[in-house]
Image (cartoon, rainbow, N blue to C red):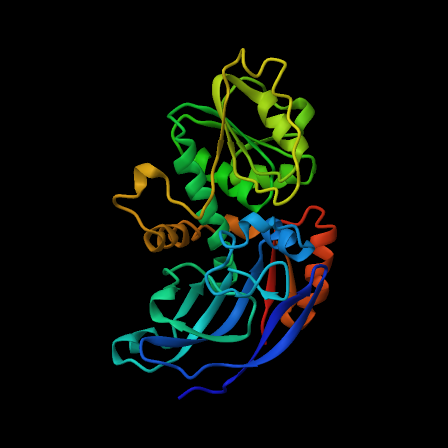
Length: 330
């Protein structure tokens, strides 16, 4: 028996302005579950672009989130980091999900109904509070697959946001790899040390890397990534710039060093994985990689759901050193 058919959801009313809106949930159908949200997370980069109205018209369809409602630029209900508890189902085979804590690629909303296949039970040892890092871990995991690091590589990760930190942490677990996290914020040094990787500001970063992963979301960061790459190295671009134009120094020594600039996007599995992997298996792996308590350091703030319109406006305008920001539900 469901508790209520009413829900509150966060909507982007127009670029730069968000609001909470009430809505009536559709009847719970066969094969569906009802989820009461415990926490959601703000994807600082992508959700910032959405909030500011910086999604190019050419990407309106490709950038749709799984349970998005509305169209870009606005009004739109957008988001994909939700952790909750399953409270009801209409199908006997899904009854084992009731009471379980789950991750779902759903917008910021206090209660919702989705197909049971859309929820991912949290593995043992993963608290709901940390599970909001699942989407960023999935992006980092896909990035490592795209980058194809080798044993003993010297790897530079430029951009110490949540995705960059997770890339550095995963890469550091490959035997023999030396990983350096590069960022403009000195406070990232403490985070890097806890994750077991070196830290440097861009000016002092070590050159001649075998692999560079860029995740700063800035043109300056990508320029730094190109500078740090050694001869024949790959620079993997994890940032997405939306409608922003980026100017790069592709003269100078770019051609002489025979650099490869390659994009990575979590919406597509790498070609080498597609025969055996799907998005569900990848997300389940991402969740299993989040059981280390050290990753709590990547959650740098928390606010109540009622404050989300104000918080989203602040983070979209001036995120500062924020990594992952958690939203708490009553």
